[in-house]
Length: 225
Ligand SMILES: *Cc1c(COP(=O)(O)O)cnc(C)c1O
Image (cartoon, rainbow, N blue to C red; front, side):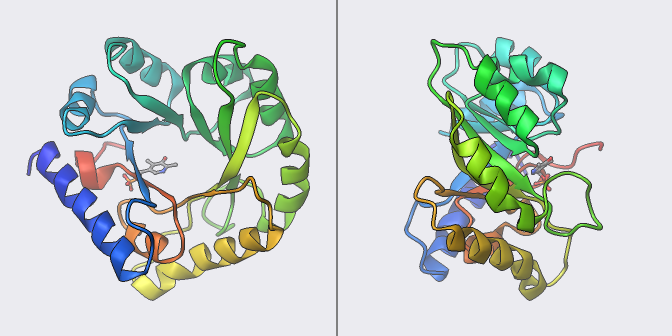
């Protein structure tokens, strides 16, 4: 199947699942994960109307961004962040989903260029500890939210999570539900973003309140990673 056809299919599925789980139509944003894919691949779905793209590797992303400079793309950074990379990330992205410590948030805050609008931030939560070392524990979230919230030039929007793979729909729903419940309990009016759900589990994520689903493989085909 061509990328453009897969795009139409995923887009349609998102709208259908929104309806099925009583989510407002259009309340879930499709974030196209284009890591390890070419600028031409990106252009193919951009022409169909896709605007939000996500990258995990800074240098690779900057190369594509310059190729696609004439396009009106909203770039999201979703990869692990080393502190010596924050200045470039603060300059070249509109969103960062993978903030997992205060130091990174402070640097992004200090380094966001004056001429750009506030940088949108999500805190990465480690919801299935055995799976990945990235992200903070859910219990540590309230304290980090409090410290990040007050920083200038960045805007805390919510959280990002990558649960460990599960086969069944019901098992896929569990970690999303856990996060959604914990974050809703914070009762923080600034938090409006739940960035969870990937190719294999985006339907379960939408059922449990995702507002951004990050989809790579199902759109662009398999990667070599
Ligand atoms: C690669 C990646 C995705 C996309 O995963 P797919 O399974 O290809 O849809 C989503 N989120 C993050 C953080 C990623 O690194």
